[in-house]
Length: 331
Image 1 (cartoon, rainbow, N blue to C red):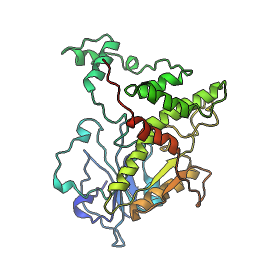
Image 2 (image 1 turned 90 degrees about the horizontal axis):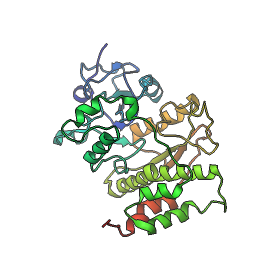
Image 3 (image 1 turned 180 degrees about the vertical axis):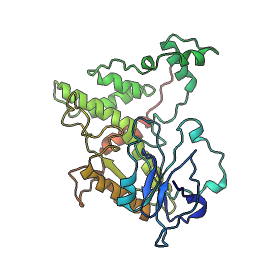
Image 4 (image 1 turned 90 degrees about the vertical axis):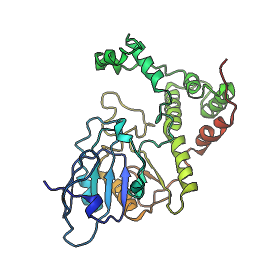
């Protein structure tokens, strides 16, 4: 196997970072590209034509499951780019940085997938409290013996899913905005209940719950990040897309409702007929830095399929209305 030192021996036209599952991948005229410890090492293998190809870097995100079968070869061959993965553990060491100035410019463009830096779940502001809660739930002490006790707990016990009351939309909203009081709760309820019938069906309630979690955990923060990038970028351009194709493997045992769209990570095992759109969209951005203002990716789309202003009333609720309300400080 031959390795390519992309950082030191090859001029790069563009580098793209994307949170996607990639392992060792092959590229036309290049042999294999692989990484160890987050670095690309080895010898330079020039392209037969003498030209330089765009480099598409893949950074795996934290939800590593069993996706190593997605090698990225299709992305490299069909997109005509070199695909490189950074194969490190995405833990505390995976995100450490000492801030060397030489790091600036290594990534020319970026695609943020399945969340952004300002998503409400990305940063744990009180990690000790979370650790203590976990320890107490499995009957471990919270002193210096906590770590050793947790290591002895059966992993199945630590990942048991609790019960969830599908009928209480108000409790879910209250949990997300507990520091904003009744005014925020009423503002959110009036918006999400506006499409309900006098006696909402169980399906209507379920869909509302999915909408609330999607808006709060992903959509509102993604739109906020887009605006921050667009407002502060000096030369770069900002684009967004929505992947809405339902997972073909989901709901095999129990069918998903017809209104269900794509779940988190469903853009990894997408169907073959959609892969062409996805590869073209990613790699075109890698090469040129250009894209459409907004595009919705699914198997029903065509070249002219474009949408805008996705759920802006709900985005405004989470990003403007609720933050503007007075924070309630518990006595």
